[in-house]
Length: 200
Image (tube, rainbow, N blue to C red):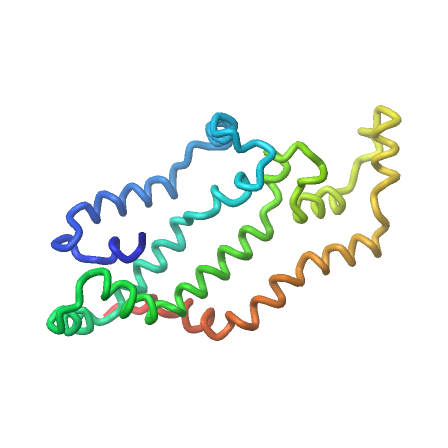
């Protein structure tokens, strides 16, 4: 999506329309209630896909990638066109290999955002066995106010909460995947976060 939006208006006539739509959606969203109704109508309640699909397209990441593509010299595109390269060839054989730093950066952003997301699990997953790890961790860490305990079931739930040492171990375990992934993407992350930030 970012590659065609980085092209000029001559190459992609509706570029400005789509860009304004993306910015509008990023700034003014429908809110939680319409989102809940859409998910329910699509039959995604208690489904793995309700945790994945809403996070796939991130407008902020798209804008980052668009700015990166625009920072690539136009002479490279012109020389590829003179050699007979078509738009698909230029996209996948020239621009995509050059975009590895920004793709790694946005991938890291997306992985961290999806991994730390607990709200979707609280709202849309009803089966306790299917609750994602971060939702489970949030339920453990958040303390229950004893004044709110009104039934025997509430007392049993409070008694079943793990002690602090086990909770700390669970939190550390939940951080391990990100700690393992980050060193491999760090070199791309450092260069990718700076690319596209300076305009000539």
